[in-house]
Length: 169
Image (tube, rainbow, N blue to C red; front, side, top):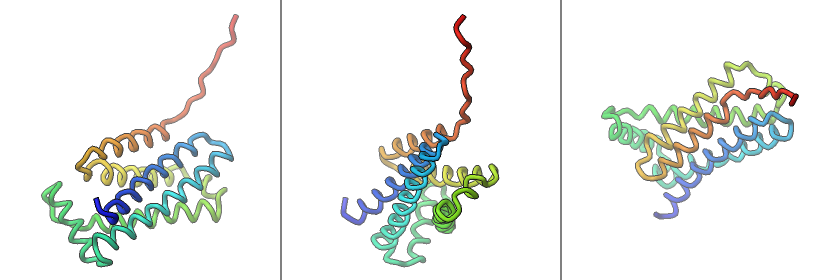
């Protein structure tokens, strides 16, 4: 594998792993874990921006048209539908992730007090993107790593219930 492919693939796997780590830290629900989650999410967002940069540099030569055509080709190989619109979904993903990072740093209290529906919309979008990018469109054994990341992510979001412990008689 050449350096460009290695950098492009490595940065996306790093980004996804950091996002899962950030959600795992946030699930602990303490001030310290929220700070760790924010740093991990920020690093993940930066790694994802590096992935997009590498993809445009090494694969598409800074051409939106080439990126659109490649997305359409990959979609057609998978589904038979020659459509490159998934590229715009990827652009939206970059913007949402960037928005999450900026909001978490500029107004952390408001960020953590946002409506639950908003949190779940963002989570659903991230899981959708991760599942498609790391499981559906991956054709090698790395797909298993993507599946592990997705299952781990869903586990981070599973509702936590406090177990009631009865005192011994």
